[in-house]
Amino acid sequence: MFKWYQVAIGAFLISGIVSASVPVQAQELAEVAAKADEAALAGHNAWMLTSCALVLFMTAPGLAMFYGGLVRSKNVLSIMMQCLFLMGLMTILWALYGYSLSFGGDGPYIGNSDYLFMKNVERTWDEATKAPIEPMAGAIPRYTHMLFQGMFFIITPALICGAFAERMKFSAMVVFSILWGTLVYCPLCHWVWGGGILAFGSDHGLQGGALDFAGGTVVHISSGVSALICALLLGKRKGFGTSDLRPHNLTYTILGAAMLWVGWFGFNAGSELASDGLTSSAFAVTHFSAAAGVLGWAFYEWITNGKPSVLGAASGAVAGLVCITPAAGFVNPMPAILMGAAAGVVCALACGKLKNSFGYDDSLDAFGVHGVGGTLGAILTGVFATRACWNIAEGEPLGMLEGGNVMPGQLTAIVVTWVFSIVATLIILKIVDVAIGLRVDENSEVRGLDLTEHGEEGYIFV
Image (cartoon, rainbow, N blue to C red; front, side, top):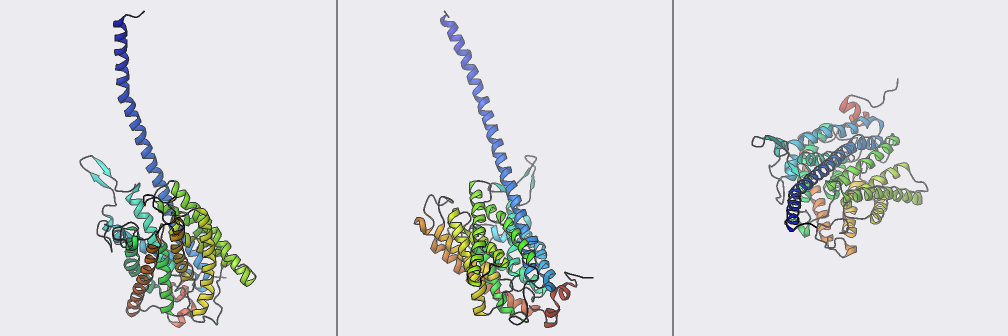
């Protein structure tokens, strides 16, 4: 039998050991948690840098090949050069001031000077801690956020090039893109994603703001509507309606469409700005909508023309991708399939009957796919959006099907984007036309822009 003092001494020793181990265990748990947080941040950043590359891949080779196959052989280098050149031009503008105008501050109309010339983006050195300072944007470095959003700034004006393909001066394209990116894209980006007048839940948001996960209004409606204005103001290509203006290489177009499909996973799923469950959801609905878009356009042609065309299937994939873009983080897979199928049919009608009825020459159907598809997607987002995907509104219903009331904000954003894009693009085009002229001369158009604008040929047969 233990004496009472032996029991007391044992209890004292055990309590000391336990009390000594508690801080050690707490410290170990803290270290494990810190390492887990660090690993999570690394994972988010790795996915977002991959998304940056995927979205850049969409412009070239993706869009360059998609558009390059749709023009005549004498203009293939011209349209590819426009895509490649914009990768350089828009990147520099974004670094100098575009990112700051789009994401600086939270004012209602335009960003401030917070990030001019990469201020508060680049890493700096802290003399006090003797360590570098990494500016952050949520779960990712500010650098990564800047790069990802910059890829959108590149591809959006490149989409417009499809409307004036084969007839706009290269110099006019350069000046137009600078002005359009500065005066149209940056304000719209700030309005929707920078806390401005169209931002969902913002104090400035009109009708509560719009749900636009990856660019239905900012990218597709703005570029598509502006493309229509470009096509109308420049006029029809020489020989439109009488000469053979068919695509010269649909194999390029199919490959380009496939590249766009792959790149769009970064475009949409990357817009979660993290790697989590919603990223997987956005990835899935992007794929499903594209697949349904292929079927929608192809079956429409099969029924109306008797044959499904290769060009129609490629265009249907892009239409489905455009339509799901604003909804990617807000809808589930079954609605995504409906959206993609609807986009395939509606955009086919826009690129066929609508264009033929009004007689405008949107060379590569930038308006019919992006303007119409983006508008349809923004509307259907207001129908199918669900808090099961996006719960930032504190559990309140979102889309019409679950009793939500986001549709007024969606319609307001659509109208504002349409009107703003039309007016601003008209003014910019008029300024460029007066300053340097918009269109190449008739002889240059007949010979082809590859030779007359760049002094080169895409194909040399010897």
